[in-house]
Length: 406
Image (tube, rainbow, N blue to C red; front, side, top):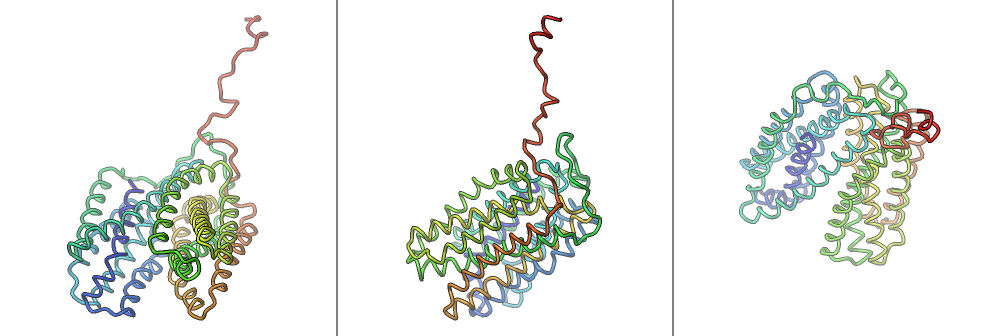
């Protein structure tokens, strides 16, 4: 149900992707004003990350999640009633604030579960997040032809229904105490301080992942697809859709691998290989090579996501976990704001290769920095399913000698 609320939030603001340009144009917005409207949402998420994380350590996370989701539903409905650009900017800012709280609280609630299955839990959250991100634009594009206000009505009432269901289905006190499986491998005690080396490493990795996802995958790569590889919009759309579907299929396996192999090696390897995949765009001027680099980049972003939150939970004391998640998300949301303009400036200056090098080398360096900073922190690697009985717990069959003695 927590995953469904996160997916509902993602769907709600995903509705805006095909709708906002049309809606803003009716209110008289020029391209510069449209940029401000889009930035207001990102600014709200940046501002609220750390305060929401701090509240997660002091108040009932369930109630805060439900309240933020209800506010998001309400402000989405209000968006259909705005009559000026100033009002639209204001409601988009509040949408970013409420959405940021939903994402932070969702992660904070689920990190209180079984540590031995935390990778799979985060993978489930990521799969719902991907699904919501895919459904939002599809629904928005479907209903915007009827009325450009209708997507906000559909999104607002849909999320309201999810909130009412969650009030009933999420039990009181859920997520307030960690439940440790008896057979799960024990993690070393998390340091009492907040700014551990593990948190610093995860913040660096989160910044880079968001930088590559929003600056690279959603801005730079489409530009290069048209100007270098000669792809058509239909081909690029089909490739991005295939990445989404493949990500949904991969993320559960990535979560299982995170629990079995270990969070730390999963984060380090996925981030480093992501940098190498980004550098592959330097020579990808043929459509087939470009599409291969595009798919590989998207899959590596998906593969590393569950491990980052799982590792963050491992290396942070439970009473500080909410704030640590808020800090990490703030780093990521900041990259969302910085990525497109920085890479856009490089492309505008005719330095497309420099933009690719910035993406690739920053990811490789962040993977190496994380490897160094995270030494000795976090849960040890798991060589078997945490819920599978150990050999000593399995019933043993009697040997022939024991049988004859009996």
